[in-house]
Length: 258
Image (cartoon, rainbow, N blue to C red; front, top):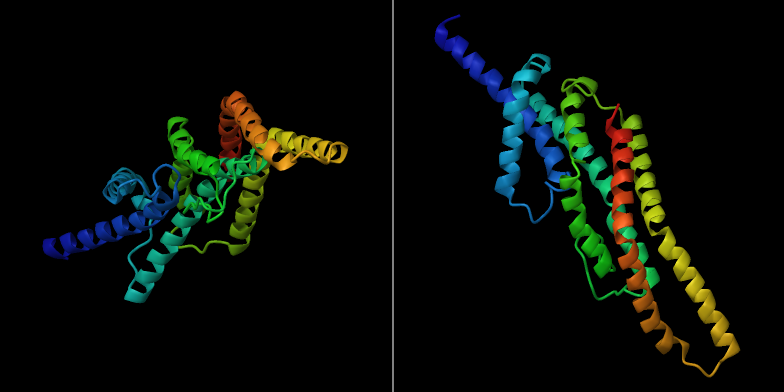
């Protein structure tokens, strides 16, 4: 083999390795909380992906497969890597969505829910509080170093989910169902004090309406519910955010720690 042929083979190998890493890492960054938000410029995300490729390429190059012989196999390998990256990023995204979901539950209980305040993240019936928690979620995710868990899982995934191997759909489905159930359970745990207060408030209103039917309960209850709920939220917001961070550490350690 001549020097030019050896150089060409080396360039092909390096290009294939870089593209393979870019597909999986790009899939993770696309959905990872904090980095995958719509407000993050695409150039910044692309730069982060390229930086991670340059960092991981020397370490992971020995365990990456050889370039496929046909374009069909090449495209299949890229799609396989993108699917794994999206799967890892999706798990982290679902776990972090417990905070906006808790804001949704709390809004219903303290009278801040409205169908005329749409949100692209949670749907047309989202609330102001869930939108605020959705904005706070990526900031807390980055400042509390929670993003380290998915990135560590990304680096380790090349050994647990090699590029030339097939991902087990059974295990992936189990992790997806567990992540959704855990996220919903964490959201309910965060909103539990406000749900309890809302139930007690509704029971008290029902009792008042039965004792004094002449009172317009709705016009009296709504301002009091919003005021009392806002005060209760202001008193417990720091504890709620700290509990979310603690639960997120446990959840991410469960999903990505192994």
